[in-house]
Length: 260
Ligand code: CAA
Image 1 (cartoon, rainbow, N blue to C red):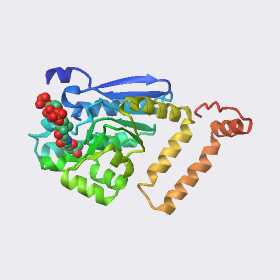
Image 2 (cartoon, protein in one colour):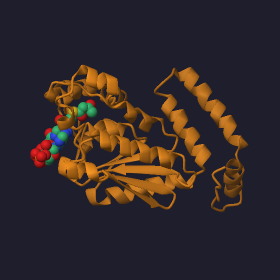
Image 3 (cartoon, helix red, strand yellow):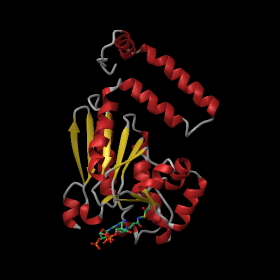
Image 4 (cartoon, rainbow, N blue to C red):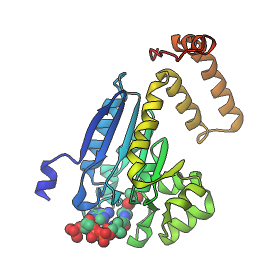
């Protein structure tokens, strides 16, 4: 445990305008202790402030994206410990980033399912296993699983998973709409980075507005959501990249976005 505390639990790399965060706590199957939470949130917020970063990929190992919250760290806590620390609240900030995020999930995503659902695009390896096993420990999800899963896959599957702890394999997760695509495990990282580099190559303000507009669909009525989208659509005509993107189409050449 001392060894664990002395080292960082993530690796951060830049790949062009994209960034890759790899959870690196192999001895605990990337269980999400407070150190992992603080390091992931700090790293993503720093990347979010960096105009040279246009998309962030979060991945784990071949065996585990993340095996859930750290059970050993939580087992002896009481209600006041959890309440006063506002346990897990920092994870909410991951969902508040303006830069798009891609979860590249291989292996176990148990509780890690919640981390993946805080990301914008979910790609799964054919080895991925998604679940909310908290109920088997006598607790319930605490990083938004009950809300995120219900919105992503609907009530029937969310209820069954949260009440029984049943897991979903990658094929079921794709059918249910939890992930956008399943790819062979050895292609997962390459595909995720390709998606991230594609996103990062688009106009940054347009990407941010598109993300905001899609995210708004989970927060508001259809009429208000469409109004919100329309305002952002009008706003994007204030960017140089709109002029460049449309000029490039007409001139039959690739656009050179300046992210402004
Ligand atoms: N917390 C702490 N340690 C964990 C952990 C977790 N969530 N998951 C795995 N580990 C540790 C194990 O204790 C073990 O450590 P030791 O070598 O010191 O014993 C090590 O990681 C390897 O794990 P296993 O030996 O269990 O590996 P396995 O291949 O046999 O099984 C597994 C893999 C099915 C994922 C199993 O580890 C498992 O069931 N993990 C717990 C999953 C879980 O219940 N997650 C929910 C946590 S609660 C939560 O997430 C609340 C919330 O809403 C966020």
